[in-house]
Image 1 (cartoon, rainbow, N blue to C red):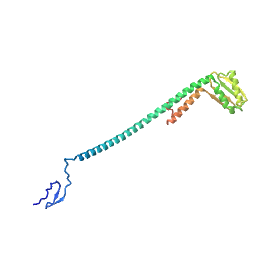
Image 2: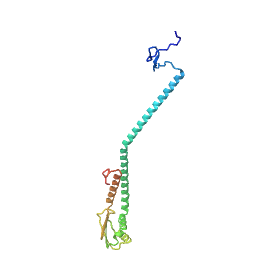
Image 3: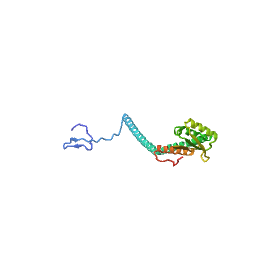
Image 4: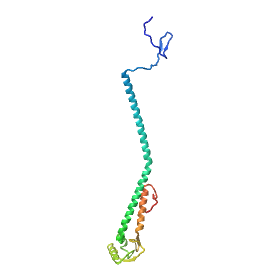
Length: 216
């Protein structure tokens, strides 16, 4: 009779015919009692796993939020571009309206100003012409004398024929000389300026035509 301590039987253990163990079992019985230090270690490990899980969830939420923000910004970009373009157009229209008011007041006080500026700019064009016809509105004697002085200063020495035309707008004029002519109408000039500005705004926005269909 032997005094060896009995060994507990473990499932999945393989014995040979003599009772010797051929292959041991990997079975690990569930531990049913823990020391205080083991409990503290388990709690600390559980807290660490919970923290890592929470951080992973936060990172996932942050990534989803970034994607959502990017989608919102991408979707709002056309709207923002439209708002910016509308603001530019309205600002340009306001500037044109203010310019028309200021120019209109200036022309009312000095209607011969554009004609005088044109004669000064056309000095080299008209200096060799024998005759110059000036057609405008309100060509009284004082205005005619002033325009004659401007022509002389510009180098013109030919004959000047004045034609007072009440049908022309204030500050509008027509010039005719031997090999050329020039004319100016404030309303038409303002319309062309508006068309040019509208075309520039449309080109800036990537369109070939006016965005608002306006030409003024």
